[in-house]
Length: 244
Length: 89
Image (tube, helix red, strand yellow):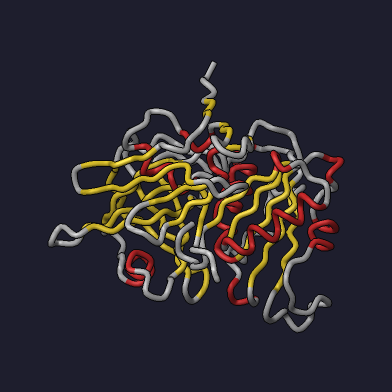
């Protein structure tokens, strides 16, 4: 049984107007692998509880983990975590959870990461873990996001930090692209997955995370491009942006 | 007709961790009805109801149902089929 542990907010960062990264101190945290998630539980004074799953965004770094939470209209957990939860406050977390949507940091295989919206969160954990362990595995990240202001981790993902050599980022803006962008707004399609991913002959491991419809479309396209379905790992979080 | 919203069985990892000592989501499975082979995490999970309902992504057979009450976990494994859990060696 995975224990519930108290988690205290140590610091926070706004990623966008509606998404906030929570830096949590979790005494006794056993460590995690990139791509895993946690369940977060809130308990009201009257004993009412609510819980929701969120991907860990940070590399495996001791007893501190980061989650990035997107505010969802009507989402009781996400609204609290984004707008009310203050430094020093505590929630409970259970994890790390899930052993499938996980990048093996010891593997030299090339990696294709495909994220839609807040589906980029566990992919960021993989990029950070790659940097932390000094992996040389080649990463190609395809990030689908509505408009420039909605991008998470703007100063970090694709910014060529030391240790990120071999990580390429392609951003597909679906509603509005930056003015200087040669690519107009539009959905991430099979042709772009082909151009900006790796060829199937390279046998990459592919991780696809995002809203259910996005994940189905992108994973189907990868399989149609010849990728082995067993090497296409998916994580769907429904239509909202709040869970994982 | 729209289908009910589904996620995938990664979402079962937490609820199942209350009653299982292994992580079932990474286990391989063979469907009891259509014989499709895959990984437990690939099951479709519907979360709109009072519990979690997992179905085969290929044939939609109901594989597992789980409901958490204040003092119990109810689990119906009726359609689970064959599961292979790899042990750490």
